[in-house]
Image (cartoon, rainbow over all chains, first blue to last red; front, side):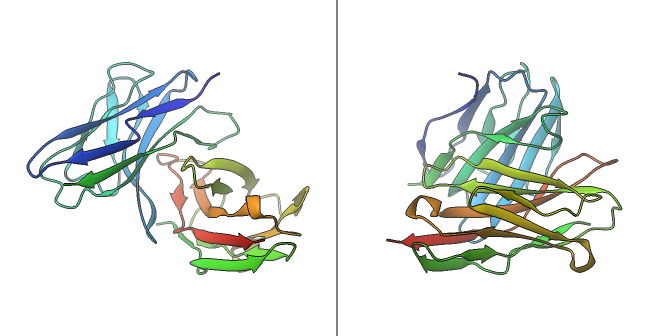
Length: 114
Length: 116
């Protein structure tokens, strides 16, 4: 079955540590996105990539980094510069005409600080 | 700039009640798309509907219906005869139809709790 796989489901970060969240899709979608979800805050865009080897900052990119070396993979690194990383992180993908703008989401990673 | 407002943070109903989730948006674009997504407790958002700004027909799908009113910039979602399985967080989203990065803007979500 095609879909988006996020791992791990739960992740704990120690002070000063960088952690990487995995996002893999087998939908052959060009565009991929990372959102952060905090209670009562909705979804806020961290980074997005519309094509391999290219990505753009979203609304809250500070303290995060990404790479897009392969079409199917879009890992997110939460760096030590992100002072409040505790949140639910969602990865999504889309393809033009699917219908237009429809996003497919993974099941998320809950990141907590130890 | 785009903005999506879901003023209802949480709604609690008893099974079989009808419930309406409100969505109000702001945009300078003349053409755009509106969406509703459902996030059950499992965490994964699921697409429910997309509506074009130039199509103001209301839509019904089973117990779900959507009322799009361009004059009031609203795209409300009604669940008829709610069921416990409808318990979830529902998000409204807006995306420009042309230009820009085509990135959707999400509202803060409405948590719907349906009690048996």
